[in-house]
Length: 284
Length: 114
Image (cartoon, rainbow over the protein chains, first blue to last red):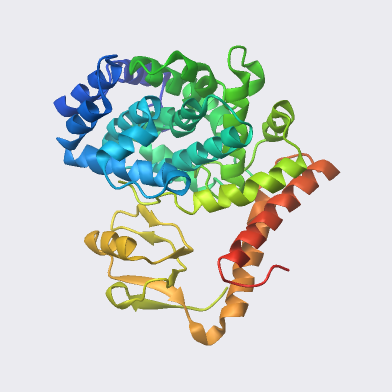
């Protein structure tokens, strides 16, 4: 830390190397990730491995219920959860478990996890409304779009405690721009690095990297703009991140790109509110 | 601000509304208010050492309390959109969000939409 209390570029460089090394996680989680990757694996095999880890089982079950129970009915077993989540979101849920375990004691992590689940659910609602063929990807992008923030919250918790006090004040700056000023890097780039390190599908990289700047998206603009809109809706309904609660101006631009007008919002928002009411607030 | 009262969590009825955020001993947010109590929520809070929660003081009147909740949330939604340009289109968007919240809140058995 520098004398100002903020991290120096040298500190950050050291921390980034730690991030690239991946957090330590249990053999059971490693086995689950490897089994999800294997093209030979069945849902039954994956569920069986998850069940060997009670904490992971609880996380998968609660995440499936939080994200999908209003779409699919109550999820009562691990195999059921694996089937309805699908492999891409399941991998995202397992990765989120690893990072939550590392950062959970820090202020703001509970709100961040709630925000992530909310954006995932809203991405799903928008994707279904637009008949997207990328529903699993959208659900996972929503869940992991702010995954880079776990790193910041974990490493600089004292700094964030102060930032949280100003999150709804007139002085608050957009979180990602503030991160660039303070750390020289933002959570979008960190999130991109995390999903690459965990070998998540390539289709997730660009939307996570550009969810605050979706107009730069070249490969998957629809996914990046959907995440941007979902993030804005979550913030509007009070499910944002604590260091910056405001809807950003990019929100309306993303609505335009997706072709969503005021009538579409009138159709979408009641469903969004209904689905959000099932999202789990407590940390698993 | 609506009146509220502190009650023992163990004796609260399911469906009762928690009206103040609940934090654990380390200050971490466990429940964001308002949220209805259900058996699972009660079990988890008790397991985390939460003994008491705040619920509405019925003597202040449900309707008045609900009106205040809705009014606060209307203001909060407007504030969260305050970084957008002040254009007629954007104002329309904000009003659609507010209306959606009002209808959702009313349909949860609270007050009739305005």
